[in-house]
Amino acid sequence: MNEPSATPLLTAKDLRKTYQMGRRSVEVLRGASLEVAKGEFVALRGASGSGKSTLLHLLGGLDLPDSGRIEFRGESLDQWGAARLARFRNQQVGFVFQAYHLLPELDATENVSLPARILRQPAAEAAERARLLLERVGLGKRLDHLPTELSGGEQQRVAIARALINRPPLVLADEPTGNLDSATGGDIMDLLASLQSEEGMTLILVTHDPRVAGRAPKVLELVDGVVGERASGRHG
Image 1 (cartoon, rainbow, N blue to C red):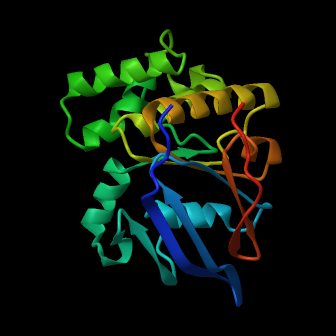
Image 2 (cartoon, rainbow, N blue to C red):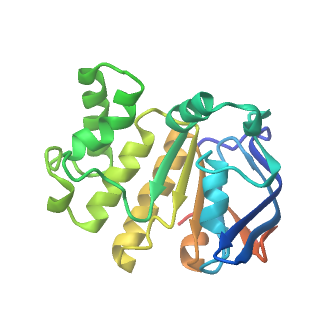
Image 3 (cartoon, rainbow, N blue to C red):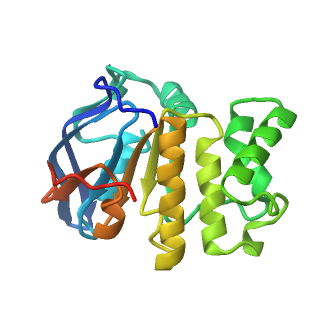
């Protein structure tokens, strides 16, 4: 097992985000700050509507804060242009979403290969790594299956493999067990914890479920738009 480095991979400082809902302003983040070390597994817990997904999207460069700063390896994302942010999302971050977001017309291998093809890796090389990842997540016999031919748990495994295709140092998982039954969700958490340990990647997982959060050695709580640390979780 790879031990986390003391050096921060990702730092967020005083993030604020407000959305306009008709005539009403909704302040979602009110000075959220956190620091995550390289190789760390962190769960971010909070009630539905607390801003967990908003914070995750900001950390992954999918959205920008109204104020505050996000640093990746000491560099501030707000200093980057659109092209560099796009490269950051493709090369440095793997996203795992609750709704899977697989392309319905592509089979499992093609869905997993897509981020590598966007990076202009040779088709054969991308397909081979996709095959190896799908075998690693238990889908070696589902390589040519379309999403509609896969169960929810299998689709989430495809999404996890896709997140890892470009060997990103940071993986962000947004309620990855939210659409799954408890047994399948437990299997997915076993897989994520195992991959995080083996690959040495930094994993930030958003959940409202205390059982899922408890799988992480470090648990952060998002309450009233601010992040606080809870008692440590555990693997197992």
